[in-house]
Length: 153
Image 1 (cartoon, rainbow, N blue to C red):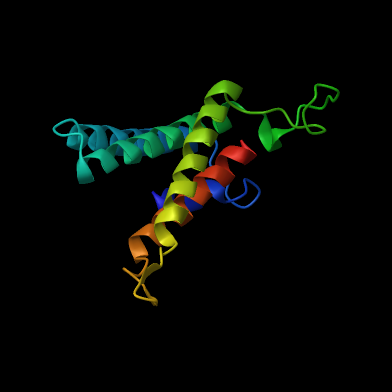
Image 2 (cartoon, helix red, strand yellow):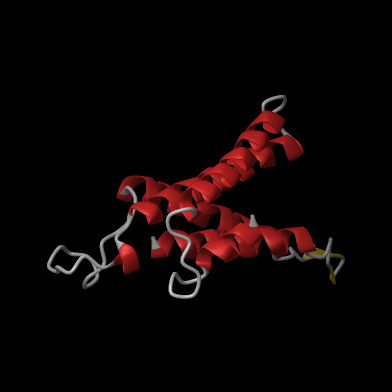
C-alpha cells in the first residue's frame, strides 16, 4: 500500500501515467481490497477486524485513482468564483471524500493514542507499561499519507 501511495504521489510532470495509470491502480488496489474483505469475513475480531481497515484503505486508493483520472490535467479548469481554490476543481465526490477524510482522521487520532504511553503511578514511582511499537508508527504514517492524498484530491 505504501509503495502504491508513493507512486500515486509523484507529480504528473515527472511521471505521466495517463491513460494506463488509473486502471492499473484500480485493479491492483481493488484486488488488495477484495483479499482483505475475504480474510476479514470469517471473524470480526482482533487481527481479522484490522483487515476491514485495509479494505477501506484499498478501496479509498481505487476511488482516488479513478477520481484523479477523471480530473482535468493539472487540476485546473480555467474558471474561478466557485468557492474553491482559484482554478482548482475538486476531483471525486465531495461527500465520499469527506467521509474518507473523517474515517482516516479518526484512525490517525486513535493510532496516536496507542503510541503515547500511559504512565502508571504505583507507590509513588512512574512505570512505563510498554513502549510504542513500529507497527503503530507505520500505521500512523500510512494514515497521515491517506489524509494528505485525500486533502489534495
